[in-house]
Length: 253
Image 1 (cartoon, helix red, strand yellow):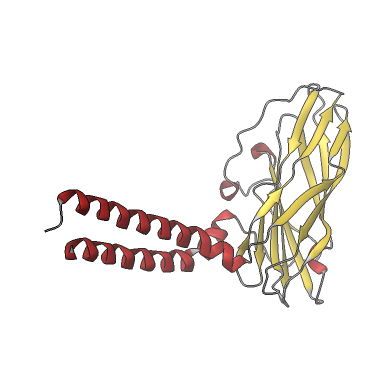
Image 2: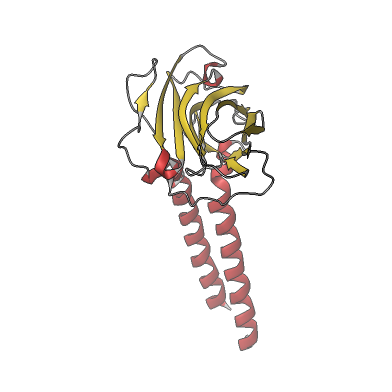
């Protein structure tokens, strides 16, 4: 007869294995399928010096080599977020990044939601034709500094941006913020609590198509989640099987 303490230890080990494998399954399938590579967004220049009331442009550069299976990006949603009391993005000009690799048509829409401190540029290839890879200008932002903006440093962040591969898997994005130095100030200005990108209103100044676009195909963070559903299903099945196996092992003892 197995001592009660040994039952508890074996049950604990079984539960640990289930939790560990489940975590690896749920957290790992998507990234492995996506190729375990990241897309990097940066700006040129990285730091902009401006005065209250000024207007400037800044190039947004994207570097991405696609997945290990050779698939490139089929679409990109650039999310530029800022403090609306200090800055305003008034226009986004699409760059040539998605035109790289096999020739295709590229379309884009922009959403300017100033009250929410967010500007979106959604770009996609049609046909996908294997997707795009490499390093090039993704967009050029036109930015205005508020006339009453205080001296200090504020950021334009890109961490909520998305890149989707030709395989329909999302690619992890590393967004390097641009720093705007207003009136020579050295103090970091107050941050802004941005609402979720998917909740942006579609009223004034929201969603306009550029000259290459005949449809509105703006995407958001929920698209990445929907693409992960197959992986979550596989993870659930594996985890469920391990739970049954662990219970049977304990009972057999």
